[in-house]
Structures are given as structure tokens and as C-alpha cells.
Image (cartoon, rainbow, N blue to C red):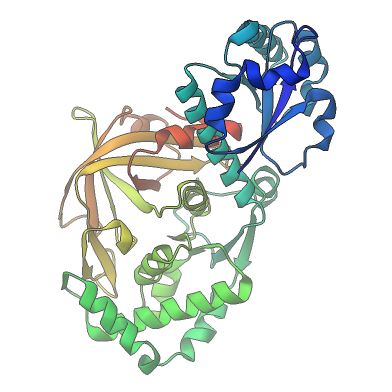
Length: 411
């Protein structure tokens, strides 16, 4: 990993002294980065795609920074270890930036904490860079009940660099008709043997679901898709097959896949994959307990890699086809959603997964979460229905990522 620091130093501090003056910080950064110190006057020589930020080396540089603030990536980040009055200068610069109604952040503190913050900052930067050019397949049209989950394709492309592609369901159906049970029999058997149990579903249902998975995967390959969202209820109506197995297996393979052609949730899943390299569980908030600050999440599909065990079930709403009842162990989780028509709002909170439930009146995978933030968010200002559950606490890096991308947090 490369790190280009755009150095601002007073005339009193000679250029060749910068490294020695801040050696403690630079030595620690060099454990993770190939470090380049570039005088601000030579900033144009830094390749546009490289990771860079302003380094305030000393006091007395405020006017230089103000005159050259346009060379910094936005939102502006200032790195200052405090030596040679560098923090004092950074504070003055930050106040000026804020007075112009622009966002600015100072990374400062003990050296280990500064390095940690730079690593988080870089992780968010790298995820944003990797999102550019990603292709999201919208296979079929969004479900009619997702009245607040629309995305403006043009604005999403401008903000995030992704492309949403509308793909007819007929593309899937054509492949499905040419895939035989014999072609998927072995994979269906392997999947069934991985399950803790099979309940409510038939071998014929599993074969059909596996054929659908193969058909959708062929479309992904043909269209060079990096993520998909599937109009699963339309497929259920047309073919009598649920998409739960398809989405579970694709997520297991590293292809973010969501149901109901939810345009916002698939972007949330793709963000998480690029940011932390993990799948997410796209779920319905089913019950909210304000007194206990708990929420029950449920859905009929979950990546099996997120589970300790799973049971093959039928689909909750239709009592047909294949669904996945995932069983997850207790532990820290993150709940996340990127929403808004322009994908410029978000909710994120840590929490603790307390237990798996098995209620009759909810989707197959059910988990009860003790949330860190106020669960009344869901009742007072929610970003729609579906939210994404991630195993582990990743709130800090998600917060960094969304703030770098100038998104507004919902509380």
C-alpha cells in the first residue's frame, strides 16, 4: 500500500529535516505503507488514483495550506502529530475550512492511535476505489411494496461509480429451461448433506432451486455482474420456485445478492463486501422492543457462511419451495443500511446477537438483537424496511467510509 503525504513545512524547517523531525510517526506508518513525502508544490506529480493526505509538519503553514486546499482529496483530512506546533496550525486551517462550509478532519493523538486512524481511513478509501466500475444486476423489477427503496441510477453512478443494469427475468428463465436435474443433482446432494436437517421441503424443490441458482449464475457470468438483486416473488409466481437458495449460495461465493430487487439493500451488501470482505444478512425488522432496546430480524435467506448450522425449510410466505433457517451464535454484530434515492443516507449501529428464535409468524432465519443505538430509530425515522446484519463490530470503519463519502447519518 502506498501513502503519499503532501507536506507543508515552514521555511524554518528544512525539507530534509521533515523525516527526522517526525520519525516516530513515519516509522510506524512504514510498517503498513510505502511512504512518500511530497512537498506541496510537487503534489501534481502524485498519480490521481493513489492514496494521499495533507501532512502538517509545523506551524506557520496556514497560509500555504489555504492557498492550496484544492489539491487535497475531499473531505479534507489533515495529519498532524503536534510536533513543531503542527497541531496549532491544523486547528487554524480546520477552522478556515469549516468557515467555507466544507468538511475537514484532523488525525492526531498518540502515534499508535494516529496509525490506527490512518489505516481505517485507507480502508475506506480503498473500498470506495474498488466500488468504481462495479455492475449491479437488477433481475426483474423491484417488488411493489418497496415504495421507499428506489435509487436514481444516474445519481448513484455519479456518487459511487457503480452501474445498475436492468435485466429481464426471461434471461434467467431461458437458462433454467435448459438445465436438467441431472446437471445439479450432485450439488443438491452436497448442499443437503451440509444441512443440520431438512424440514418442510422436498428433494424436487431442492433440485428446482439448484437449477435456478445455476441459471442466475449464468446470467451473472454473461453480463459480468459484481452483484445482483432478484425479483424473487415474480419468479415464485412464474415458476413456483423460491430464490432463497440462489441468493444464499451466491453470497457464499462472494457475489453480493439480495432479494425483492431491493435497489438500496443490494448497494449496502456490495459496500460491506468491498469494505470488510464479508457477506451480510438482508433482513426484515420484525418486532421492536423499545423497553429492552431489542429488535427481532428475520428473513428466509441467509449466506450459509454466516451460520453455525442451517436447516433447509420451505418459504414462510408461500409455504413452498426452499428457504434457509440459519442458526447463528451469540456475539457482536453490526446493523447497517445505506438508503435514500441518491444513496446518500445511512444507519449504522453495533449490537449483540442474543438468541435465535423460531416463531411461527415470521421468516425462517430469526435473530434477536440487543442494539447499541436507540431502536426507536426504526419506529421514528427508518431508512425503509430491509437492513443488513454483519457478524462482528465494524461500526468504526463503516462510519469512516460513509463520512468520507459525504453521507448523512440517520439516528
